[in-house]
Length: 129
Image (cartoon, rainbow, N blue to C red; front, side, top):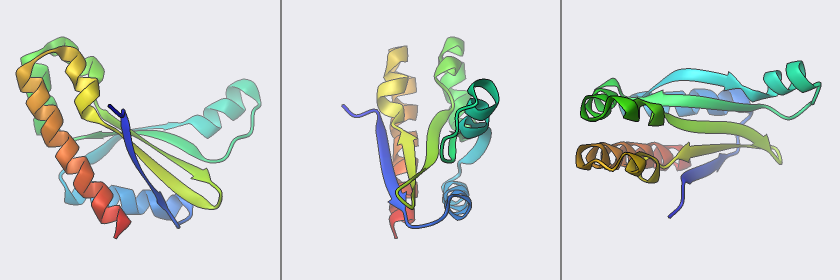
């Protein structure tokens, strides 16, 4: 079982990010966190890398169902995705919530994972078009 789903966009990083945010919003997901790995590597190690960010995407109603089923399962949230530059393109890689949330071993959480995966697959389809 794969742990991620991805698509490469022929767009600069900033334009790809706006397109991803728009597609997420259209499917009831929002960006709730942003880790600028490029800036952290530069500040902490003096290492230069191309743009690389880890984002958290969330649908509060789905997150509420997960936390209500098992408060500790919040450690598996949100659905992360990364954007990074590679060979003049921007790669968008989404965490597959099904194998990750399966770690909780709860039927309700599994149902949420399947619903979230369906949303992310629609986002990817939109990004491909």
